[in-house]
Image (cartoon, rainbow, N blue to C red; front, side, top):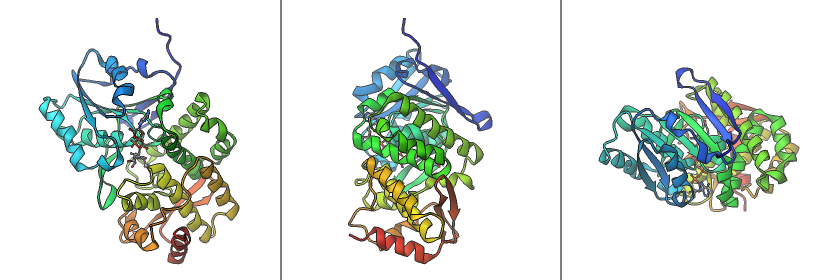
Length: 365
Ligand code: NAD
Ligand code: GLY
């Protein structure tokens, strides 16, 4: 008899679309997947790297359903309409009807694409998130933002479509590369910066244990991150206000990712450099103290995260790409700034000078 693993469950409260986030260690082979599948059929969407690692374990959790598998190539550069269409082809070829359920098994790329496919297929079918990267476990699997990239802009095509459940096993992080692990740390640090200064202090104090991937420390970090995200999403599902603060550094970071055609910095690396740029604007606007920025930079550097944009990028590249950001409203760019550590605000009144000198400094060799 297999002993049951202890699983913590958080909830995203969205009325009749509320869902659980189940967080444990070694619980992959115990996920109660079938209880979230209404019909007889499901499609697991994953990528070629994940297949040999975790696919069989997940398939074994859905023995009483008819399962099809869609294996996508691995990489952010495949997060586009062309590869999304392969999911629709598979669903149609295998005669999936409106009772089907999609299962995303992978990182944020697979999660975002599967969620988007689920939101469109026959006008919307349910999907389940099984996030396998740290970044996906603390951020992308929660909150229902789905989508794909366009060559001209990151995540420019998408929808809001909440999952039926988010099932997290920290043990799968054991196979993640150091670089991908650090990419997830950028989003964890983000939660401390935007809403939870005690958590920021805790990350600083536990940095070595986190880097060593100590399981109970990781579970605490994932729970705290998911708790902050679910609270914000429950208050503002479609980003009419407060949810915007989850995008600290993203206007700069998305510009970096688009500039590099999604083949350079990882998402968390781009967000790391972007958060420091947003903090530089915050400093120039009279909010943050320089000492605080140094503290954040040290922590990001400890996890080997980027603290600068790629050297080929010029201020003019940022300007061109940032004005295509989803936070531009009526021609005005809005930025997420930090009033202080643990408190973010959305600002469209910052001075052009603060932004220009931030870009000049960040792009200096
Ligand atoms: P990813 O999905 O590309 O995964 C990173 C790499 O890790 C890939 O090579 C993947 O195959 C591999 N991998 C996944 N799980 C693994 C495991 N357990 N062991 C070994 N390797 C593993 O990238 P990501 O960082 O997970 O996600 C980034 C994406 O998420 C971006 O497209 C970003 O825009 C999106 N995102 C979305 C939201 C949202 O709210 N929807 C939030 C943040 C980020
Ligand atoms: N990652 C930003 C959001 O989910 O709103």
